[in-house]
Image (tube, rainbow, N blue to C red; front, side, top):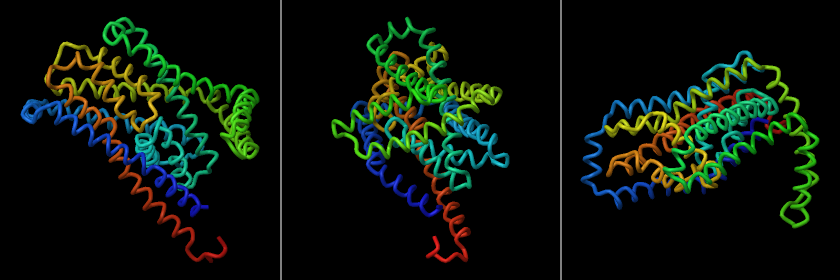
Length: 361
């Protein structure tokens, strides 16, 4: 079983080679953009005059974001595995950060996290359920959080970037749709199964899907398992409350990174609430961009939304630091945790197969 999971993980990494290349090209493109639209003298001047204390605060916000991400996973996991250690949840969370960044729609994080959790000795069904519960709470909190900010600052952003209001609403509806679909599974699994079955059969008729019956069997099993695990959300109200609180703080820390960068350039005049709201607004726009890290759209959206906030000659540097903190740094740190996880998994495999005839496996 462990060997199969190891192969699965190798296959998952291999399938993301193209995405990694895209991420690398995006970074190179960002650097080229910097030197094309900003002369070297301006870049050097901006860097010399930066407030490095605020840069450190921005970095600290990202660390807080990661620690709270791990705390949420740890909180849910402890309900099933009482001996779970926080360090294990932190490792799994950071591996998820890596694959969220290098896959479209952040779709690769949870599958690889499930593999890492199984390598730690957890069952695949429990691992998937734990990750889904955490995902639902995170998405629901994100939707409510950003909705409150968009409503509160609607007219402000409408006057600032009127053309982007529609895009933000689409992103909001995408996130809301995911939540409604998952909650619907927990409330009425039969209805969801019929809906998806209809779509599958339709795709089969137009020859866009094969082996539909087999896929439907797996789907029914997955929906049934999730429906049973969804009861935890209704039962563990205090745990869900803690997750919501952690997530609110986590999102605020993430959005505050932009404010820290704003202050790092020695600027003032825009309130922290406006910048946090603008960042939440941008996050909604990025939600439906099918490129790893919402590449190009993220940088372009930041330029359009925050261009009026930053002084002339600093916006491009702000984009660079924002992307390094919120996108490229999680990739680097997550990769380090993945290496640690691979090493520990290999040691476990050797330990579990020691003295076992290879032909018996």
